[in-house]
Structures are given as structure tokens and as C-alpha cells.
Length: 451
Image (cartoon, rainbow, N blue to C red; front, side, top):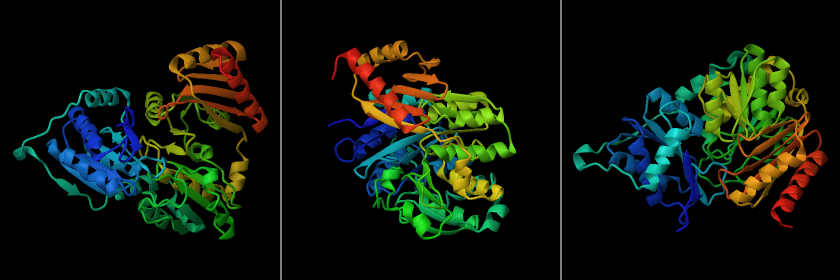
């Protein structure tokens, strides 16, 4: 049986072949052996395989002598907020994030309500590889307890970060595309609290996706035109577990995930000052914004847990990833589409201008992404060759290799979730970015002897 993709913060795989209830149960058993004492929370996105995995995971938690707090369908950031509020020992979100319907997976949370960081995650992974468990006898079994409203605490934290009255006076018309994932549950309550007139697409969280679940321009070709056609001032598009957010402006233009965190940071910097953090695969817009406001800017390795580590190290005002994941420490150290929705509306209310006008104030760079199949040895050879031939103004080896020039950068790194190597370039034009990628691929091919 092929193995699912496993990392320090969870796993994901094709249901039935790579991921089964037995695999999920064994992984949770390992997690229980490493987590501190206390109850464990469990939630799921809308995927049709979710209830099956929920039952297996809940049984493993109860079987390890812990109370299982059943949150039902809830977003990933909601789980994080609940863990902190309930002082749980950790949590498991059943979701394959943006992967296709055939997949499901699990995300592990620490007691701090963040995605499990490196050290505890490594211990869980080792425990899983060693088949560790601590199944209990009958007298030590605990119960599965349904939590009636796991969303309220999260909602209150989000609303505390914005001027609710100002947003309500604007009576924004909003289109929300939850695409049959978990986002509609809190999404409706948030938009109601902000006094918006709204329409939700895919509100039923049943995993019957209306389009491919990753909120990219090519997957939203039926959604984007509706924003202008129906007279909405903004369109919000979530992934299935609602930790990522893409945005469409009032004329139906897909702004893209790279802008989500930057717009939130722009609003934050109108009110407060402090360091900004993003990962090394995200747009230079965050760096530009930090320089414009005279605040420190830090980069992390790719991965939410890595961004959070750097945020905590530098006491950051704000963080995020270019994949559409704003991270506001006031709400939680976790990517949060609802934070993005509320704070972008707050920015629009504060500035009293259209979303397209807000975006026009930001620099327009062109990012191109590509990939290659390379072995670890070939990747190492390619890193050395790129560094020697491309003569960058600065070089970072924190995550693969990132080469920076005054108005452009190139990243080559191994994927955390697929057996491939990713190349990303961002420059002032699409042609320049494509040319930089092409040159890098030519150098790599010549070095390792492939056509």
C-alpha cells in the first residue's frame, strides 16, 4: 500500500489507497503518546470522507484515555482558536486543504493553537514510524463530547481587530465562495456581524466542490464574473478548510492570494507598528510595505509553522504566506481567511475607496512558478551551480536557494508535499520572470546532463 505524504505537522493522501482509517488511527495514537495530558479537539472540513475519518480519530483519542471534543464541521483557524480557549492538549483538523476530492488528511495542533512546530512534530513522526501507542483498558476510556458552538470565541477575536461600526455603516455587498468547504459556517456569521449584504456560493459543507478547490484564477473562472455582474463590491474565495483566502475586486478581476496578507498588513500598519514576516516563496510586496513604513522585515522557510516560529522570535506585528494566509497574532498564530475578510473590509471602510483602487497603490510584480523532477543529489548540485552562475546581489540557503537582485528574485527548493523541485521567479514583468525561470532550468539541465 502506498504511503500518504507525511510531514511534521500532519499527513494527506488519496482515500482508500494511501490514507485509510487504520492509518489515521495509528497516526493519532502516535500523536497521543507525545502530547501533554488533557482533552483533544477534532474537526473536519466538508469532504464526504470526513465523517469516516472523524469516527476513527475520535475512537483513537478516547481509546488513549482522553476526552475527544467533537467540533463537527469547522475551519482550521477556528480549531486553533478553540484549542487556546478550551486549554486543550492539542487538536486534529481532518482536511486535505486544497487537494482534489479524492484526498483527505490531518493537520496537528499544539496546545498553543498553532500548527505543530518542528520539534514536537518530529517526535510524533518518529513515534508513528515506531508504531508507538498507549491504548487504555476499559476503566480508563473517556468520552466523545459534542461542542455545540466552537465558532463563537473565534468570531469575537476577529471582530475585536476591526472597527465593526465603520464596516456596518458601509453596508458592503459581498460574494463569498466557500465551495462546499468549512468556510461558510463561520463566514455567514462574520458577514452578518459586519452588516454586509452577501451571497454565499457552495454554502453546504458537503465536499461537493463546484470547481477545483484551490482558490486560483484558473479555478475561479465561473466565480469572478459574478462579482461585477451582480454588483458586489468584493468577492472572497476560500479553500476547503478556510485558512486561505483569494480576493476578487468589484470589476471581477482576480487579485490573487499574494495580495491577501499584504492588504491586511497595510491596514495593520495604519494603526500600529512592528515587524512583518513572510516566507521566502512569497511576493516582495511585504518587503516593499515594510520598507515604506520603516518597520523590520523577516523571511522564513516555506511552511506555516516556520513563518510562526519567525513571528514569535521577532515579536511580529503581522505575518502571512503568499498562498493567501494572513496571520494576526491577536487572533492566533495560524493562517485565517476570516481575519482576511474582516480586515480587508476594514481597510475599505477606513479608506472609503474601491478595492481596485487600494490594490493599485501596491506595486505590480509578476510571479511565475514552475517545477522539475530532481533527486536530492541533483538538487544540491543545482543549488551550487545557480549560485555560481547567476551572480545575485544576495543569496540565502535557508530553504533551497533564493537569489535576490534589486528588482527580482529566484527560488529553487524541494517541495514539502510533493516529490518535485519548485522554481519561483518574481520580477517587474511576466516576460522577465519567464526568462529567469528558463535560464535557471537551462543551467540546471546542463549541470546534471538532462535535455
